[in-house]
Amino acid sequence: MTASTRKTVLALYMRVFRIARTWQAQSAVARDTEVERQYIVEEARTLFRQNQQMTDEETIKKCIQECEARIEIGLHYGNPYPRATHLPPMGLATQKGRKLRTQQRLRKQAKPIYLESHDET
Image 1 (cartoon, one colour):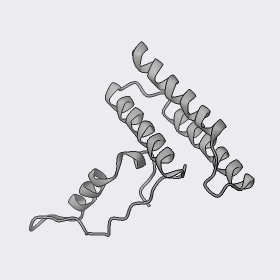
Image 2 (cartoon, helix red, strand yellow):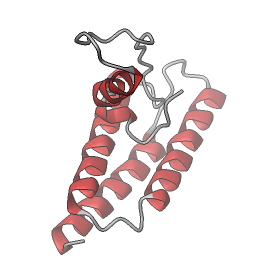
Image 3 (tube, helix red, strand yellow):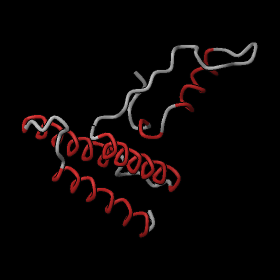
């Protein structure tokens, strides 16, 4: 990891914790605010620790983009949880003769960047 990438990652990490410290739930209920703050902190710790040993620059850049996207979406909608997406099974257009593996590859490509760290459900 280069020095500039390391600096960017640490800045994002600190930004997430600053957001969590000042976060207010849309419902204005103190309990909801506390639960959402706790979720933000735990999610950040989990994902940053999970990706701590990465060395590939392209993978690190994708993770940085995902983090920035999740921050912006969370701030915009006032909801820290990932936004759900739905792709019906076999719902992507295919050419004749393509098999299930192609559908799975297309579904993986269609996954939004802010959900890259979450497993397929």
